[in-house]
Image 1: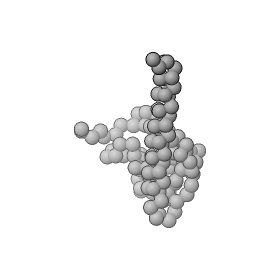
Image 2: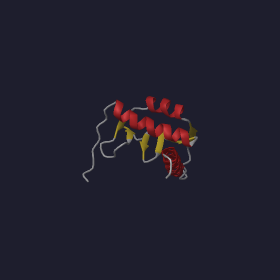
Image 3: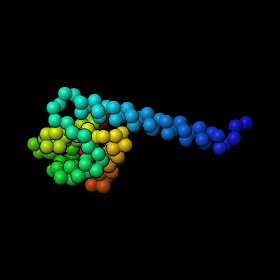
Image 4: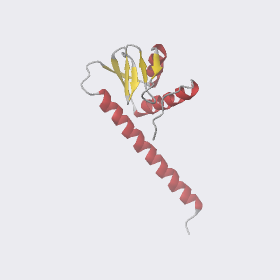
Length: 120
């Protein structure tokens, strides 16, 4: 019989590997969306993102869940694309991207943002 501690260890390691793989996939999608030939792309950290996001006057989209747009569409957070004042921002590391994703989910909860839910 396999000891319980070994089973717990295997579950923890498996979960950690899955989290790392999903984070890397999400980050590679983000990098692909910001490296599409757009001329003005800058590299930023989580701290840079929070600073720029708080400066931008962005409102939650009524159509796209989890997306934010400025009135003139020069600043957006949509589908792994981050853009402030017409320049795309690419996160420097996978950790920055994970922190941005968690920040935006928390932002939605903290500010009680209501967005349209699609009927499924």
